[in-house]
Image 1 (tube, rainbow, N blue to C red):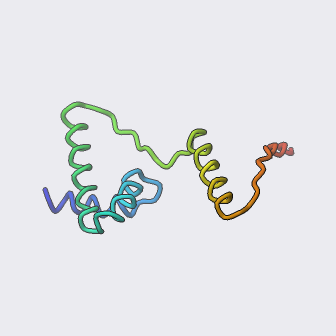
Image 2 (cartoon, helix red, strand yellow):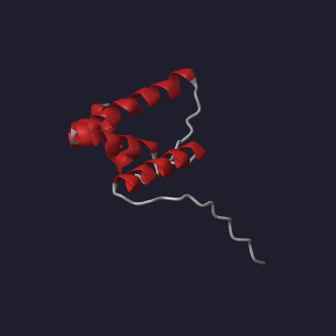
Length: 100
């Protein structure tokens, strides 16, 4: 079971736009590669247990961008530019009309 979870974790961290890859990237900075892979294996083990024993349906949470995420990122970038000495004025843009 341990070897299987290890292989699953390695495959999961290589898959693009997967929540497990995002978590792995966040953890690998602190823990290093090997421990981060085992953290993903542990998460997969808990996920498999929940699906099998509680009958929960798994829904992949990818890197979706919400309005709140965009607002926070915009504010963070404005703050960084101001720290560098730039004057920032936010002007809303209009979406281009779809041409048929």
